[in-house]
Image 1: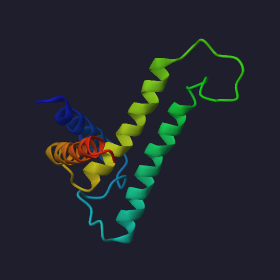
Image 2: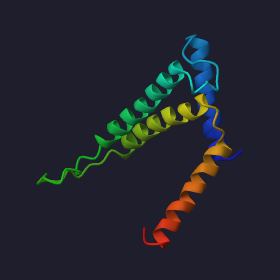
Image 3: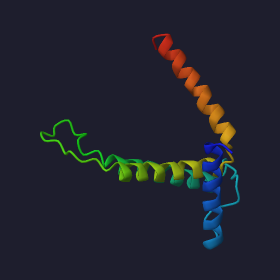
Length: 123
């Protein structure tokens, strides 16, 4: 099993355990994305992921251009933990709509090829 498959498996395991522990936490997957309640669920999941990325940004103490002094410490572990939290929400979102690891990889590769081509063509 490759690592992307394992990430999907672990996230699904967590979501199933959460549903088992707190019934009603997640609807049956995949959801019908045309339904309002499904879109609300997806929006909530995505926004929670974005919120976690903002929490990661809080660890970048030297990112303010106007700051005169530099803070020599960077808590890499805490930063990485927040990024992982964000990815957990993003992977949950993908699972909720039924995306597979292969689909994600194919979409990633397709977009990668597009942006590489843009760079080569002076986009």
